[in-house]
Amino acid sequence: MKTFRHLYVLTLVFSLTSGHAQKVYTYKAWVTLIDKTVVKGTYYAANEEEFVILGEDLNQIGFAPENMEAVKLRRQGNTGKGAWMGAIAGATIGVVIGLASTQDAYISQGAGALIGGLIGAPVGAIAGASLNSGREKFMINGDRDVYLTLLPRLRKYIPHQSINP
Image (tube, rainbow, N blue to C red; front, top):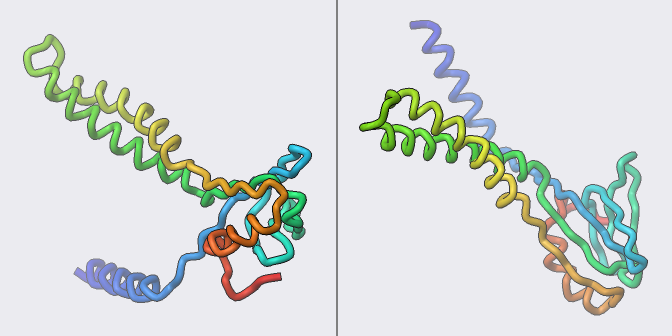
């Protein structure tokens, strides 16, 4: 009984503390330059003068709008989350189909459910990963006016709204 009381208190504490915490999402960025070079990093900031990403060594890399052809952004962790959700959905659908299709067959319903789940899980994982890995693409084509028009949309993805270079 004491174990349940302690578990209840811990659950209450975690739910109260996590209710006020704000999640910060980071976005992977792919900046395609006019010369077709692609620079990858983590999106950091955007202002009227430049678009800034963090490189692999966490140094800031700024790009002038005149040098950028396109920017692609994707939230980090979306692909893995989509794969897990797809695997669970695929396994569930596979189990249901396996149960339904083995009622009059030579194998048992349990074996049919297992086979259906084993087939459905990887198919669902692939589908979930591909559906949830979408990137938002912003075409700039080296035009500062287009960049300034897209700037409010780009700023929505900044992980820390209070800090801008």
